[in-house]
Length: 179
Image 1 (spheres, helix red, strand yellow):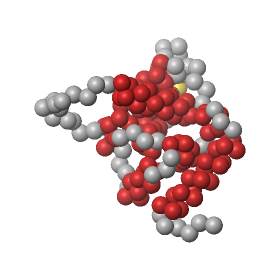
Image 2 (spheres, one colour):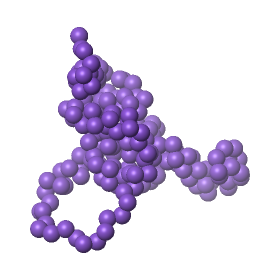
Image 3 (cartoon, one colour):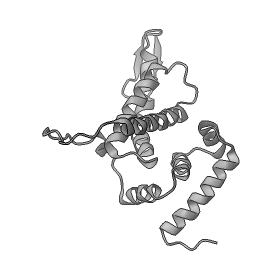
């Protein structure tokens, strides 16, 4: 038996049953789910699409949980790849003449409560070029230049340059004077 000392699953979990793995993943999911939806929105997805991409990403994370070394970065990288794939697929789709008459359920993304300030930040991010928006989304989620560079496959200097340009562009968006 393994003792879990925090969270709603506190208690004994049979060792080797996958129970501890599931508890660890559940804690990670609770901590990162809303953050990942916000991240996906920040890099350019709509609310419903962000919720769907987040769900797919967490399914993949659970499947590979035992081998993922940096899960916070891993889920963001997978989510970026999923958004890119969804955009490519959308370009290949044939538009339909009519929309279905079925009611649309309340989006899962509404579970992510955004303050007015957060909505303004997301709107400002949407005005940035994609590369700058991507870097800012990672920075907002607490990643440093070296981590971002590794996940995006670019140099840390490139990340710093994108960050500086994004800050300058955001300053213009907010009407701040820039040097």
